[in-house]
Length: 223
View: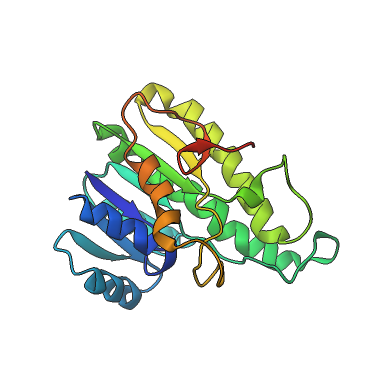
């Protein structure tokens, strides 16, 4: 299996890349800078971990990835920014909201569309969108408006892609890693390996597995 993980130089993305590589899979480990991607890949020290510069907001980077990576079985849209705990919806800086949407929503949208030829050619194609329970409308309150609204939209995109790609056999799901102790999540959360295992679960689903769902630890979450 060949997987591409965005935002994989640290946190959940890096741990997902490590788990996939440990399972014998080839991984394109991507980051916004070549140096960050190479440093993370070197730290994992696996022959099947390939660093790749990929800024998901850059059309040129996406086109280059689609042109150069060859075969692909799994796309993990993990890159995300602006966990804006300092903001409220009633007073939010909308430039921050737009910036979040460029990475958290339009990035996965652009990249998934660009890589559809490779995914359609795969025998076992999967798309994993790393979301958050903060995007669950069932329990939504106030706060983190840029992050939450961009992840709500990513969940909607997950449903649409799953419906449109079902006939191609491409399983598309959103996963919530939970509150994880990363640079974005801050101290006190669950270990990063636990959060990344939700990503690994969705990336390695059997062909008769679910599509168009929202999961944490392999269990459904309310939309």
